[in-house]
Length: 82
Image (cartoon, rainbow, N blue to C red; front, side, top):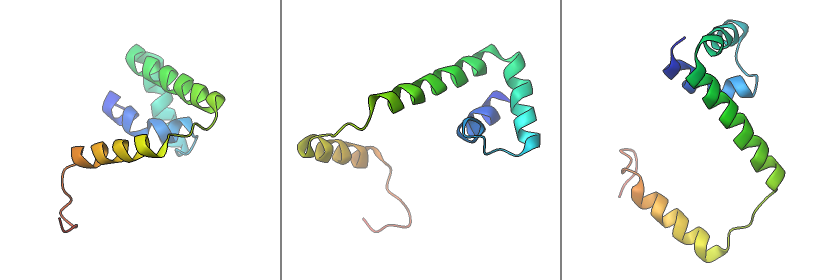
């Protein structure tokens, strides 16, 4: 497994949603790749911190501004009419 493949499967690996073969490949890669091990560890810690913090409410005005900026940053979709 390459680093790019591990990153592609990282969420499923963390959630234990990979089949046995992919799990074994991921674990073999993680055993030899310090960079991917750091990415996994950091991602797991980020998830744990998010869960500990509880649900945060974004004020409506800020939420609207955030979604507008996200929408503006996305490229137009071919299947949508502009």
